[in-house]
Length: 428
Image (tube, rainbow, N blue to C red):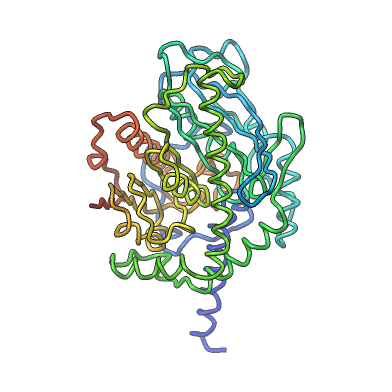
């Protein structure tokens, strides 16, 4: 075998692994070692890098204590399937009331993950995170009385992940005065209902995910992973990838997840009116609209929710793709926080969306660094080289500034936020 052919095979394997991680995301990242690009592997840790306290999230950025409650929902989707969901609500409170912090995930998570890994050809046993990982949330607290009402943002987890996956950013936003709702999505998520039943990915979803992942790997060149393309070339490539047959088929799951978000949003209006029993009667600031953000396939879903539902003012996509949204004009603000690969595969939105569109390309990070894995990952080799607290600050700062500006109408100058190694592209 020639050296060139051998290198081509190695690169193909690297790309296949990279795309698999991008699709299956945080839940499987612990079994994918040595998946960073060569540039990322060669980059040293920043001088003065800060290591967060082992086994816990960093303290939330805002002044509120963070409360958390769980609610379950059931409805019939547009494809006539019965979808049973759970939703975690992170919200501002005034006191922890002497309670212990809420558990991060749930005890059965490890066995569900092991089952999934074995089905995908992996090895069971390695923990994705410490089961005793400490949050800064507290179950069943009283909603703060400092404000009459609080604005609402939805968070959408990645494919095969779990509703606690966005706890890091949910805590930051809730401590800053937002209510954040994170849903466990039927078929594509892993979660535990209030009655104790656990839910995992369906075989159909898993099979379709693998088909889409293999197709994406065959269409992705090394250049897309490591190098920012010129805008016209990136737009051309992003259209090709998003219109590929398996990509078009897989987009149906983002549509179903978007229906989940919209159904829970329907119920928020009932709660606010008092037509549905909850702690939120009269306390939800819905007249300003709602926001939505998500990681990976959750970012895909967030974009579709924003496009299709006028109750949502805009979306933030954390390193996800744009399946189901090819050449969409959201007619609303949109923000993408991403690796260079996600820019190259989503660039058509710079031309298709008529309202404010932001793309922040962050260097020295990998896909899982846009989720809780930034702090929870037990295998640090699955992380990029950017300092964890620095990356958290970038994501929280941009996400909060986006919703402050477009939901709350605050005079927030997003363009003035600058970070080393971050390129912000703004259109128009």
